[in-house]
Structures are given as structure tokens and as C-alpha cells.
Amino acid sequence: MVRRVKKTHRKKQGRIKEVKKRHFPFVRLFYYVALIGFIVIALYTIFFSPSLKLKKITINELKRIDAQEVKEEIWQLLPEEGLLGAQRPNLLLTSQGKIQKHVESVFPEIESVTIEKKIPDTLLVNIIERGTMIIACDANSSSIQESCMILNTKGVTQKKADFSSALLKSNPYVQININESLSAKEAGKKVISKKQYDNILFILKELPFTIGIKVSSEIQKTAVGSAHIRLKTDEGWELLFDAEQEPRVILEILNAFLTAKGGSAFRSQLTEVDIRLTDKIFYRIRNEDEKKVSDVKNET
Image (cartoon, rainbow, N blue to C red; front, top):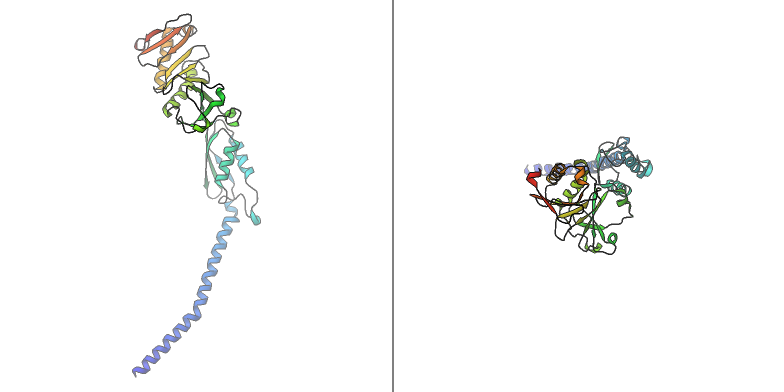
């Protein structure tokens, strides 16, 4: 009896295995068919779906550059139709790096470009325009412009300044002459600090509005390792200040001093104003050799 039960059990197990063997190929086939179908649908969605066709390019507000010109450059970079009639430009397949490099090469007024894809059909382009640059030149060089280096915003030399390049022809810059040797081999040399960089540009930008005077775009650093800056105004007199000091305070002191002394009539007699100290102002009058001193507290 026991033998019969065991024999019957073996027969059942055998039939079950046979059924599994017969059904397994169909399950596996169904799995592969479903996988292939999923891949086909995914590829269609990526390459051929009209819903992912790039339709809009949005650009942040710009001051110096025409945003429409940037859009036209991007559209011209993208082909109308892709491989095997795929929808182009396709948002997912659009190369952000390619667009970034192209836009930066065409518009020297642009400092950087970042691009973001917004599903299903929009490209978000964020552009940072270049501000006024500072170029450092060796004042002791026989040919000053041949020894000039462009500084980054941290006051460090980047590359040799090519005054015939689109970069310098398209962007405002300030030339600072220093008593230090500069060469393209010395890229990475710190000339001024970031604080001095920002303060110099702030003072040059605000002087026409605060005092009503314009200054030359060529200034001078008075000594190696010094933060003292000398610049020439359009009225003929020179201004000396410390680029480490708070620029708003410098402008307030200068404005109060010039106003107290008689405004434009007094300025026409000046040859130099030195506000490098926080408590005293030194100045020279035309045809007078000695410097005069004014107490900041009394003038302000």
C-alpha cells in the first residue's frame, strides 16, 4: 500500500514538472515580448513624440544683449529634423553643453550660461552678462599694453589681454598700472584682493553720480602690496584713496569735503586730493607746492 502511494506521488510530481517545462517557454516569451514593447514605446516617446518637441526658449532679462538675438542663435544651431524623421529639435536630446559653448563664443558680453530643460517643450536659458573688467598692466614695461593680464573677480591674473579681441572691444574695462612684472606664464598671480576689486569698480561707477565728475579708465596702484589707488578726473586733478576702505564712506567724505570748500569753483583749482587716511584729507592747489591738510571731522 505504501509503495503504491509513493509510486502515485512520483507520477504526480513528474506530470507537474512536465507541465512547468511546457509552460515556461511561453512565460519567458511573453516577458521578452513585453520588454521589447516597452523599449519600443520608450524610444518612440524620446525620438518621435511631438509632445517632446522643443517649442519655446525663455531667457532671463538682459541689459546689454538682445535676448531675441540669443534665441535666434540657439534655433539656428538646432536641426529641424532628426534621424529617420524624428521630431527635432527634441527637448530630451538637445545638447545643453553645445548650446552653452556656442552662445558664449558668439556673444563676448556673456560671462556664463546655464541651461535647464523643462518638460515637455521648454528650454530655460539663464545668462550672466559681463560687468566691467579690470586689466592689470606692468607700468615699468617698455610697451605697457604688451604686458597686460585680465584679472578675474578675485583679482587674480587669468590670461594675456588682447586689446584687439572681441572680448575687450565688446566689454567695458579698467586698466590698472602696477609696478610689478606680469607675463602670460604667471597666470594665477594675485594682483589685488576681491575686496579691492569690488571697491575700485564701485567708486569708479558711483563718482559721476555722487560727485558729478568722470574719471579716466586708466588708474594706478601706487606701490607693490599696497591698496592705494591713484586716478585722474576729467577736471584735471587726481584722487588718491585706499581700496580697502568702505567705498561709500570714501565718497561721502569726498563729497562733503568738496562741497564745504566751495564746490566746482574749488575743484577747478585742485591738482590732487588724498583721502587715504580716515581722519585727514590732504590736497594740493594749483601753483602751490605744499600740500594742505583738512580735518575730516571739521569738513564733514
